Each structure stands twice: as structure tokens, then as C-alpha cells.
Image (tube, rainbow over all chains, first blue to last red; front, side, top):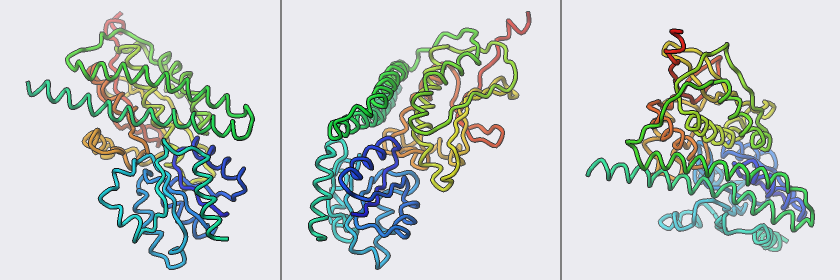
Amino acid sequence: MNVLLIEPDRLLVQTYAQALERDGHVVVVVGTAQAAIHAADERKPELVILEMQLVSHSGVEFLYEFRSYDDWQAIPVVVLSQVPPGEFIDSWGLLQGELGVKKYLYKPRTKLEKLLRTIGEFEQVKA
Amino acid sequence: MQQARERGVASEQLLLSIAEQLKMPLLQIARRAELSILQDSTEGLKEMQTTADMAIRLLDNYLFGTRLALESEYQLQMEPVSISSILYDTGQQLDAMAKLYGVELRLNLGGKFGPVMAHRQGLQSALVSLGYSLIEALPSLHTNKADTKLKLELAAHRCRYGVVAGLYSEAEQLTAEALRQGRKLNGRARQPLATLTHSSGAGVFVADAILQAMDAELKVSRHHNLYGLGTILHPNMQIQLV
């Protein structure tokens, strides 16, 4: 699967990318929302993994921009974030509805194994 | 009473951002260890060790800063110190972490400086905390210049009031406005320095607390077309007279 990984921490991104590649995925990594839009345009990802806490533009801002293009409406987005899901309790409807977040994983409690399993589920749906 | 309440709130805010910040190295170690287990290799051991060492060092610095923030009337005892040696030691402490993040750390001492008045441990802790925050932030601040090597300069230069010591980079986002906003949002927002770093930026606020206890101030400074955070240190007048 072509995966766009939006993760600002340089050490974490190496670990996640290695784990995903080991599992057979093709990974493009970027650190900011702006770079993610360019990467999505160039690499046509089949899945986006997104950290909500980014520099300058947040994950939510990225999602608004990303979902404003017709071509990208159907691409699933999995949030893998340091922000606990409870902090989005008031905007849950918006995240899952208009912004198309398919799964919200809280980073400190998500092992690589769970992340890979989640991506595997999307791969199965696609197949 | 009011003062004590304000002091309590300030130190709670500092503790919140420190706790958030310290989650990151732990997470890096946990995931890296998991990957090594999955790969059945010892490949990431060196990286994990560096990250753990840095986390312990940061914890020490943060504890020092928090203690000072809790006792805001406490002033650090000043002594004549060599700024060159403090910057050199700071560089030594940050070097391994900088390499992991792909940041080239440089020491730039613009001339010879006589002793300045500072608290040695305090100044060094402030610079290490600040350095960690900047090293962590730099990769995200330079995404438009993929071919540019990330650089962070530990520098000292003379100014009208004394010697400025700080950390400088090419990141234009290091502005006085970003710092002012960050101080206002510290403890209230998850990302007080949102234009600078994806983390809580605890290192910046710890440096702030330590420098305050030295009767100094963390300021945004420009030097040789670089943008930085640093503080003004006053020369030791007694030695100057001699």
C-alpha cells in the first residue's frame, strides 16, 4: 500500500517508516501539513497516517485542505497522534464525518503491531 | 497570597509542559525497542541509549528549572564564569542528540571574552534545555529546503550591554512575537510555540525560569543573518578593572 506518513518527529518517523516498509508498504514521509499536500499530489497515496500536532498548520487544517480536493475524498486517513482522543470529544462528528478520519490511534498507547494491523485492515478492504 | 497563587499556577504550567515533553523520548525508545524486537536485531541500540541519556539529562535540567520556578524569590548565586567553556560543554552534551536528528552543531565564539557573571550550572542547564527544543524543532522548520543541512550554532558575541550567549539557526520562525505568544500560552495550550515546534517546547520555558533566577532574560536575537534565542550576560567588572 502507498502510505503517506505525516509525522514531525525525526526519530519517530524513522521507526514508523522502517516498520511499515518491513511490512511491505511504500512509505512517503513528511513533517508538515504543507509538505503533505505536495506529497499527496505527487505520490497519490492510498492511505494517510496523520499526527494532529504539527508545526504552523495543525492536522485539522491539513484535513480541511486535503478533503477540499475531489480526488482525495476517498483516501482513508488514520490519525496517529500524541493528542489524546478525549480532546476532540466535541468535534468527533466533524472528524469522522466531513474530514473523513477512519481511525484515531493515541500514539503513546499504540504499539507498532497495532498500527500495522490497522493498516492491514484497510488493505483488505481495498482488495 | 495572590503572588503565591500566581507562582503555583506558573509552576503547574511548567510541570505540564515538561511532562508532555518527556513523553517524546520515552515514546521514541519504546517504539524503537519494539521495532528491534520485530526485526530480531540490535540495530537501534545505540540510538536508544543516546535518547535515554538525553532524557535523563533533560529530566535533571527540568527538575532544576522547576525547583527555581517553585521558589521564585530564590536567586542563583552569580560567579565569574568562562562563556567559551560553558558553550563548549553545552555542545558536548547536545552533540549525540543533534547527530540523531541530523543537525550539525557548531561552536562560534566571536572573539575572546573575559569572564561574565552567571551561575555556571544554571546557564548550562538553560542552554541545554533550549538546545534540545531547537534540535527537535529544526527538521520541521526546514522542510522547504530539503537540500539544506540543518545547522545549529552555539554562539557568543558582544553587544552594547555585555555578551550575548545563545543558540542560532536559519529558522526565520524564531521571532520575538512567537516567544511572546508562547509565554502567554504556556500551560494553557498543548503547543504554545506552534510556529516553532510540534512539541510543548518545555525546554524554552525551563530556560526562561532558570534565566529569571539569574536575573537575566531569554530573548530572541539575530547574529550574522541567523535567528536565535539567547541571553545577555554582563562582564565581570572587577576583573576588567584589574
